[in-house]
Image (cartoon, rainbow, N blue to C red; front, top):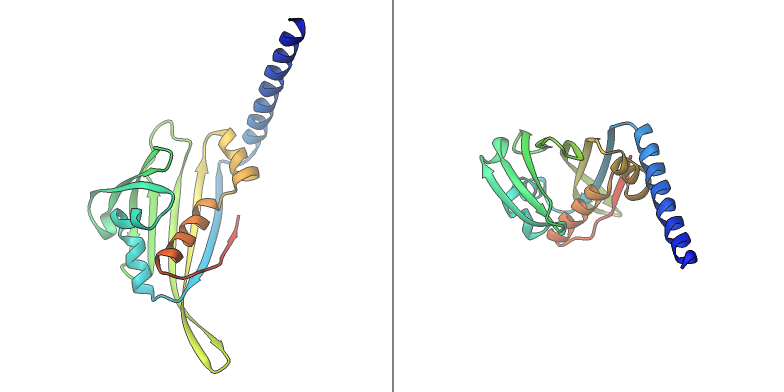
Length: 188
């Protein structure tokens, strides 16, 4: 019986030590971070912009959310709520929408939230020459300017998951919706 309690105590204190170490390292990391991801698509800027701008229909092609409900407005004044695959809800607000190449979105901050920030979507038309053929491309770059308030989440974001995972998933999902395979390049 002594051996059982020794092992139980050892495991408990090891887990507490690991948690405190992660939280301690997380407190040394900055709250703010800046990261971006970019991908190229064969579809036109208007097609891709319309797909990204249509908040309430994005649930049809985004793998990370279960529902998206438009709460008010459209375009530059849109406010909507998303529920992710784990049942967590976030409210988003459009800060800027020029209707053709730039879109800025922000998570509505709620007291007690673990994170906040903005995503800026920039759509750039481009082209590629391969042999005697010219291919039209649209380059979409998402820039995240985020804040992570919880030190454990800061540690996980920096060392385990990375700051770019959500953007990478979003861009790949957009490619699948457009019936294309795309590569995503990210930096943090």
